[in-house]
Amino acid sequence: MKVAVIGAGVIGITTAYELALDGHEVTVFERRSTAAEEASFANGSLIAPAWLASLANVGRTSNLFWPTTANPGGLRLTGLSGHAQWAWFWRWQRAARAPLQTERQAALFRLAAFSLERLTAISTEERLEYDRSQGLLVLWRSEREAALARSALPGLREQGAVMRELDATQARLIEPSLNPDTTLAGALELPTGMAANCRQFTLQLKSLAQLRGCHFQFGCEVARLDTTGHGVTLTLSAGNTAPQPFDAAVLCAGSAGAALLRPLGWQAPTQTVYGHSVSAAVREPLDAPLSAVIDARHQISISRLGQRVRVAGGTTLGGRPGRLSASEMRRLYRVLMDWFPGAARLGGPQGSVQEWRGAQVLVPDALPLLGESSVPRIWLNLAHGSGGWALACGCARALADQMLGRTSDIDLDPFSPARIKA
Ligand SMILES: Cc1cc2nc3c(=O)[nH]c(=O)nc-3n(C[C@H](O)[C@H](O)[C@H](O)COP(=O)(O)OP(=O)(O)OC[C@H]3O[C@@H](n4cnc5c(N)ncnc54)[C@H](O)[C@@H]3O)c2cc1C
View 1 (cartoon, rainbow, N blue to C red):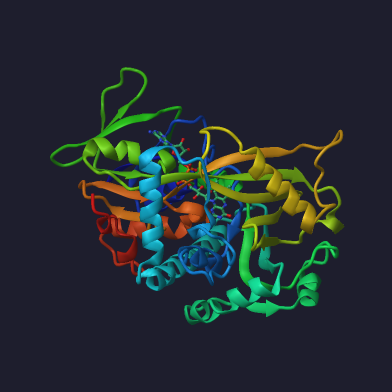
View 2: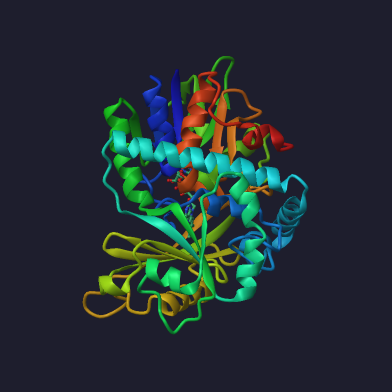
């Protein structure tokens, strides 16, 4: 088939790669000048199925990683603007209380585990070299947090999650640079979790997709999609090129996906929320994390990516578009100072700090939209929330299988766009 992929973030690139492996003729359209310039640019870098599955369990007070948050999924509300954002928020809260929540968590765990397998296989087969470190610790600052989290562990273990509860001494042996002055009640070790550089991976996979025959059109914004009797046409925003015909299109446009679906009569209930990150050079390796930790109370991760440390979190719904939130940035720095005060070079002549804000796209049930949309021949790989990197390789392989009519290795029904009432 001749397939158009719209968007060259980690989702679009992994999708293009898998489709090219299956022998399709693939063209990727990207409005930016290269791949991974938007949400895939400087994310938290975490890949851990149990962590991700715990995010689907957003409505439970005993949520494994976010035990003290008042709002589902740890979303912080900052000045919601208008009826639409409030309406979406109530839908999100209702979905979090729905009885299907445990099944959703299990489905997300299976997809993330499948994705980790596929990421490992691609990385080995293609000999990819990107910054990564093995292991993830979830840090509990109080006994109360630990106790709340403990009640969620049996469910995740049933699904196959490998986890080990640690006391503070054991946790400090795994991450010896954890600040001794910050109270640590205990931790949960996810040995199969990891931190890995999403942007580096995406750029390398893009080159491999190109070698396998994928065409890339950068600086090309798709203005609209239309279906014809037997295919799809793409109209570009700029220039006077004629609409380009394809047999099918896959929408991997992140936060811009819903706008392309609207003219086709599909009102996807997506909401864009924003997260923040700080990346800085390692100041002293002995003071830096060996891999990744998550501060459960603040929902902030600190990861080691080669010679850099990345702190990420602070997800907000609402606020001013396009602006870093000063209060969220302060929280990131504060949590870094709490756990690894000497890790990063935050100032001085050799300091090079990158502060970043990126979009996360969510639907109320917190599962991705993966499969053919209600508009024939338009496929979706969208709405991965805070887990797009962890899910990318699995979603791409599963979608490629679906497009060939092959049965996938995992049950994809929970992610079908058909579950959404248009
Ligand atoms: C602060 C933060 C921390 C995060 N931490 C993690 C984490 O630890 N682990 C994890 O798994 N995930 C994490 N995520 C989520 C993850 O980064 C995203 O889910 C993932 O990057 C989404 O990838 P994407 O390809 O769908 O979107 P994007 O990377 O945004 O790519 C979409 C692309 O589509 C292009 N595009 C849009 N519209 C058009 C158009 N009309 N024509 C042409 N091109 C178009 C855009 O330019 C863009 O390049 C985090 C996100 C944030 C913001």
